Image (cartoon, rainbow, N blue to C red; front, top):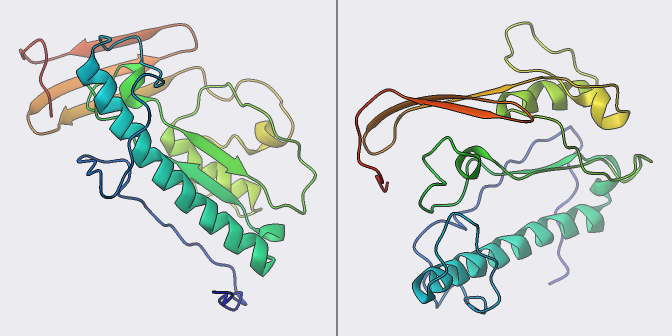
Length: 208
């Protein structure tokens, strides 16, 4: 208790990842949420079994959230929060039918939160423009003032995040070929529409 590591003298990039919230959700590790209070996505039926599953899922999210809080506390306690960019990002949607392993919004939509150094005066806001995962690297490089190499994919949203200047991209492309089974799908997402093409015969529901 009370011991803190010495702040690094050079720029650093820790990339901690979390097993949470992946299945299974053992109750000795994750206390489930109240099943009657969970908010069901509109693509799932409202049954006791689904509510119990989501309650377990929410319980694991609570543990991950607390762990993120510990990391943020260390940045504050060491003074590193004053000049450290923090990025919280997920890699895909939840492990639920019509979500993970699909190209519907519930499968490809990710959480993305970027917190600037506390020394900056940029106010917090919701960024509602289309953002692809490949945009994260060039965006962070430009925010840090590092030239973006020509062979880096994606578009930088840095100027939009600091001062909105207009739409960066008009569409996001997503792709899936294999996840547990051969299932080639391609999609284009715009602000208004989602167009998805499936290229193989498959069951109506193929759970990974």
